[in-house]
Image (cartoon, rainbow, N blue to C red):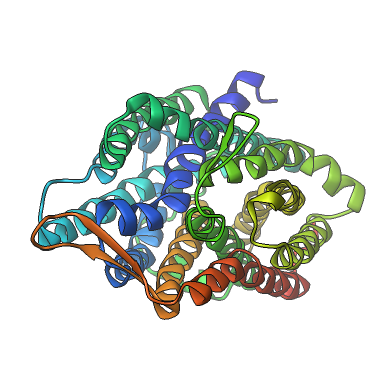
Length: 447
């Protein structure tokens, strides 16, 4: 039986990765790159697409490498212990805007973003794989997974809620604010990752293959539960990715800037914070909800139904700051579904890893969990890239003035851009939620 301190330690790992680094990358980066850093819409979309193609190679490789790691710290924990500081440093550099021209900025953005993907993979793939070796008890796996999601959403709540107030505290230009906050948040993420590596334990030893081969990769594509779960994982991150990537544009261009209600500054990070705290609460309730419904598959399906219905409902809310609390209420209702399904996804990956070990005779836990991380990055970044593409099609133009080095944003068709933004936050995610329901019907493991 794992101690409470170990569950807290495991939660700190996703508090760092999911609640800080990935949360900021998902919600702030599209707007940061186009409106503050000064990349064009095309460059922003291309950057995220290139990074995803890069991850298709690095994530499975990292999973295979992690599965074969042997050290006095274990198989997966050393990657967290020694990857913590690089994670924080690269994250800080990614939010720094150098005083370069358009070409120099493009080179900096591509270099830092790809480095961030490498170090995130090196830390997060082993982190996810830890769940497969900390316990063999299925109920305890659900508990660890729930703690993980609560940690991610609790830190996401703190990060997003405090963001505009920290910006005001730092002062100066927006680029200066993001650079300082990148350093602060990068330091906190490094500490959380290190604490996770030190506080957790590996109780189970993976059944290792004798030497490296491509057989685990071949076995993976024959693993029917893995195929469906990976598609589901990509879709859940598409669902979240569209909403997070477009939230900043929605507040700025549909609601005409931050909304202040009774002294509360509701900018795009605070707007999504209401969802974070809801996800935290219902993520903690997910094991009980799953037990009540009867299976992970049924619980996931009901959660996806909630997401689909509430996302469609959001589209019909007027684009008016006077309706801000109705929008917040709809975000909260959607986040109930997200909170329920988020822990289930990682617990189901553990089921798929157990299935693969029984079928093939050797462990491929790291490889399987790497697909979960790849799905996370693929879904979030591709959706972010698509947001940039669709906004460009609608009439949103951004870039850096070659003479002054200043960021320039032009809207050529305001009604089309506003409608596109509103749809990207509502109808696009609703369609993804319906696809998740279909894929769950095909997923064969009935735990």
